Image (cartoon, rainbow, N blue to C red; front, top):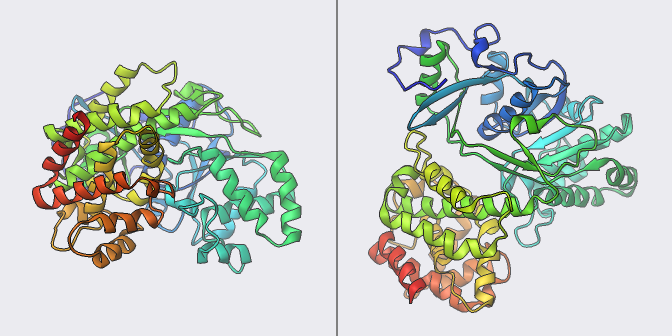
Length: 510
């Protein structure tokens, strides 16, 4: 039931949300699972508002041993809170029309890999574990930005290969768990990536195999044949906007359920999950939870990565540079809405094959409604973070398609220019507090390039950025694209993001 927000009393005095206080009317499934069938790596908000919710809905229709053991990497906050709350938490679906609160009850445990490495390895190797799922973000896979292969120069990867302590990386944890599995019972397993990587199943499989192939000969020969025979890596596409948790959502849970939840998860009402049906040891009936199964995930994946994620990035960077704290605030600015429509229709859409069961205009309309969800208040700093990893998945291929056809993708150039102004602002230019708050693993290297760039035209700076491999290897073959990014950076610095957006639109129509 959807109810409008109301003013809350004092949540600190309320009983804690747990198994005794979670009302049956908001609990799914009605009979929570007691057996673990899924180990999930990445116990953040997205998993708890997406895969866990879809699994809870599936188990509301059919029983099964599909409880989820959640594993955080290093942060103890969520895992400790879940344990204190007997693995219960609330999902707060929020939209301008009202708020709905539910409690998915599918977790059977919560671990922290950095503190409980043996328990994590035992769980990965347990005979009852049939699926390992991942939401560790794009940079959690420790791959090289240039080759998309395993980053063998990473100290953490090298330490995991030596085996001189508990595994530190996601791929290392998986492979060491697989080793323990093959040595005990060798039952089949599915590894399912739920991160925004192009071909995430194939990418995960490649990284696992590359790690295995880098092991000593005896370990490699023990594991590789079983990997090829018994482990599958289906691809998937996931889609739900999940902002950071704030006291607003804690208050919403207290108001509606009369309990105190320290780790609720906010989410938009929309949720989508598309998967290849290649599971080596069974799966939940996720189709009953709204998931779609297909033989070809890539068209859905690219539709989402480019139309939703790629456009979302441009909105975030322009919004941050315009001083807008949230995505709804940003998309309400006419120049940002126009830039979003332009990059979507002119630059991204021609690079896609739209799946036959997607009604395109309805899908695009939903995107703009989702971005405009003022109740959700997704922050520009959150959407704009980790752009060095995200944009590599979104910009290069469509940009190259246009450039090789003799067309300039003006709004893709604007996306890169706005991103660089946010995370590596030119000397003397302040991008504002929202941009300054964006986290990015490449911030310092890019800032170093900005500091060392010669004064005057910014082409040399953009050349250095592209030559660093930020967006792959091939955009450097197109100096006109480099020059266009440099021009738009200069306009942002001199005249602001609205002027740059207008220039990009003018270039498109020239």
